[in-house]
Image (cartoon, rainbow, N blue to C red; front, side):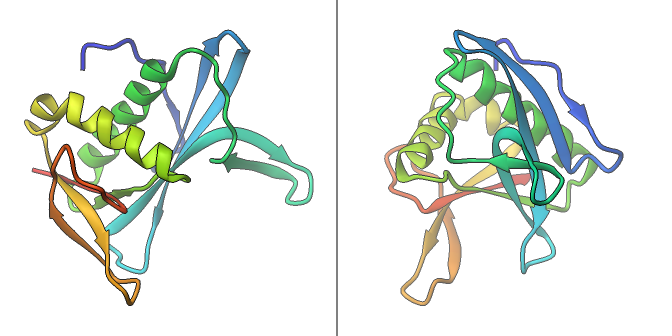
Length: 155
């Protein structure tokens, strides 16, 4: 993706990334966390503003806040950069992506669609569907599909 990306900082096992977003609202620290799901090969990508939680006496990722910092494309490209890094270190792990709202999931679908050719060079991309029992399964990605989320697999 030929889009400017922010510098990423990571922990020792590359499951938590942080970066600073710069825009109309100033500097906002963002966090990206890769956490294992019930399926040990599937990791959830959590993303949002990094905020201090006094109750837990530590930082947490708020994925519901709307930062509106005017740098959406740079932020999304930086999140994609973390996917490249994570999947290069852990090629056997698949990544599940779902927005915290339906609008965000549509935004992610649009971003994937706009960069599908380039992303497809490195990844297999699937739409995630959910059946009536809550079981998530993948189907071939369709830029016009209405998906529950997305599953990214390193080739």
